[in-house]
Image 1 (cartoon, one colour):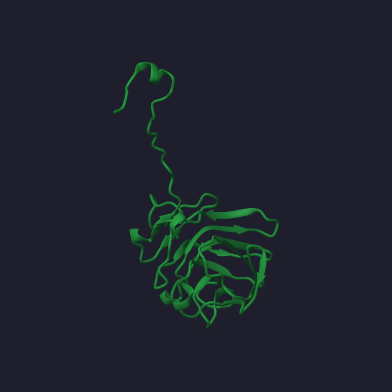
Image 2 (cartoon, rainbow, N blue to C red):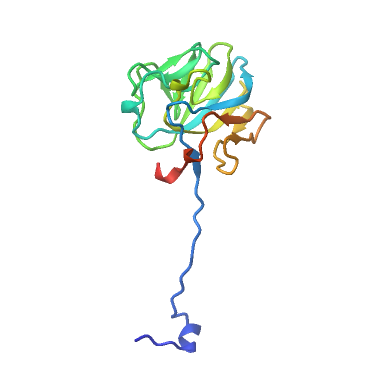
Length: 199
């Protein structure tokens, strides 16, 4: 039988339940079938420009299929970082690419785990970028992965464009935090939003 006493309360012996709200970090997980982020305007590159995206892929790669695209040039394969014909390997064309600072080349293994990684893409030729996570006119080239924190830098390392791609409230149209180019997801559904901690 519990004892309730004002003296015990004053002395701090009464347990209190404290509710702690934990903020969810939302990321949009592309389905690998026809979802990708399309930019509201094309980004033309100058010499030395580079792009970064963060992604979480999990263990999807075994059944992913060939040439699923992380980032590349508009509507062709002149500049590309994709999966290769072997779904768990990279294919790299027309760019110097790094993953968490380590060089990647065609046939490099794609890590299969749920860690967030940063992919840096530095085109070695002039190009334009209009889609992230897929090829804008070919739906089956999209990756089944959460892609976020799109960034574009010039050769001096100055940030020109940034779109976090993490606002569940904004939905299908994600607004830039740097620059004036936004992103729109094709074939959007609310189900794309996942708790990053649970991927």
